[in-house]
Amino acid sequence: EAQVTQNPRYLITVTGKKLTVTCSQNMNHEYMSWYRQDPGLGLRQIYYSMNVEVTDKGDVPEGYKVSRKEKRNFPLILESPSPNQTSLYFCASSLSGTGEQFFGPGTRLTVL
Amino acid sequence: KQEVTQIPAALSVPEGENLVLNCSFTDSAIYNLQWFRQDPGKGLTSLLLIQSSQREQTSGRLNASLDKSSGRSTLYIAASQPGDSATYLCAVRGRGSTLGRLYFGRGTQLTVWP
Image (cartoon, rainbow over all chains, first blue to last red; front, top):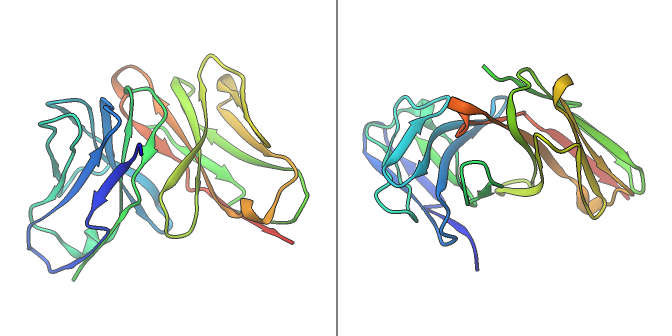
């Protein structure tokens, strides 16, 4: 089944403890992206990748890192999480940088 | 910076009504526009993608139009059903140096009651 998977789906952690949220797609998509969704603010783009080894900032990249070493994976790294990074995170992919976006199920992160 | 607005923020209608959701954007230099549906606690499901050169796209009871010059898109839902209850989001993709950027509206929360 063609899909975008994220792990973990739920995570509660403490301030300053490094964490990684994984994102994987099995559709051979070139483009992948991370978003966070907050009440009243909607969905905002964090980082995106047009292809392997090519990443760029979105609207809210501060406090996040990404890497794209292989086509199928695009992990989101929080080196030192803070409570203002508590949010619902979505990964998405598309065949090309201009194509229809397919979203993962989301990761709900709470930073205490 | 691109700003995307969706009106109304919430809509409650009886089953069977035809309805229109609105999306407006400030910068007409877009590559395409995509409509999504989001159910509570779930991810986004793509409904329709309209390229900037297109005027409309249709899928079943859904029809989306695009007027790039005026910065507007509408999503028309025919004969609404309770199963259509969800939040509907529109997103525009930039052009040129912002091609990889996707800008979302805050959504219209739709409730269709029997």
